[in-house]
Amino acid sequence: MIEQQRKTEIMSRLRREGFVSVADLMSQLQASRSSIMRDLIDLEKSGLLERTRGGAALKSSAAVLTFGTELPTQEKKDIHAKQKQRIGAIAAGKIRPHSTIYLDSGTTTAYLLPHLSDKRVTIITPSMYILRHLPVEFNGNIYILGGAYNRKYDMNFGSVTNREAGEYRYDAAVISASAIQRETEEVMGADPDVTAIKQIAMARAGKKLLVADSSKYSANAVITFAQLSDFDEIITDQIEGEENE
Image 1 (tube, rainbow, N blue to C red):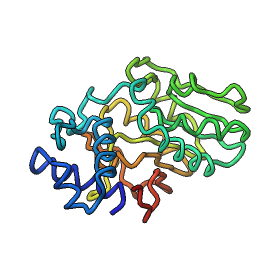
Image 2 (image 1 turned 180 degrees about the vertical axis):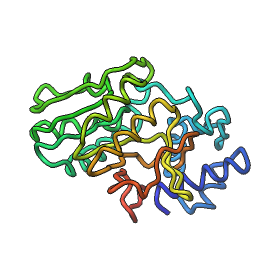
Image 3 (image 1 turned 135 degrees about the horizontal axis):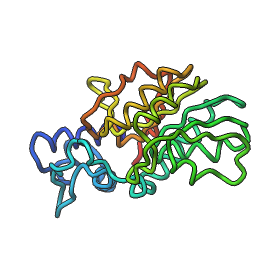
């Protein structure tokens, strides 16, 4: 069983029973102790559970990301960093030189930046976080959408941002998500102001790319802003059939 499937099973059992033991998970999922512990650590960093002696308990206050409960951007920047680096390199490879792209808010999208430096692209984004992480050697243009600044998400949003986002045409939109529901194929967020911009950019984009580390498949959120089928490509750190033992 691959890592992504293990995490999905762990969260399904937690939602049913409220607690899981490491020993039971090793037996149920036929995985090593080190793999199970690594999965639990990742899920805890995502705010979905709390590790306890011998197992883990569902973190009920964070089981579903609701309005205002998502971690601030600055607190997420180092979570799943290796996975995001991998995603960023793959996603940037899908971007053609000299194209105009919408780069979504969040931390995952920032990992494209080092791989876009020589492509002479034009980046349009509401994210001040993206601007702060722009490499010195970046050889292109960047436009920041105006609007009300939100410190938590380190981005602009609101009616002004939405209007400006809708005035551009994008060769590609690179979109992030808070959660993905595998069964229903819903792509979800935790704040209506943030998801509104995503939908506007997607509607104006020639190609739509979803970037999400595999922990998002074990998460849940309150707002559905798209379906997986709305995207031309879904880029994650988990390759089908790959085992992360």
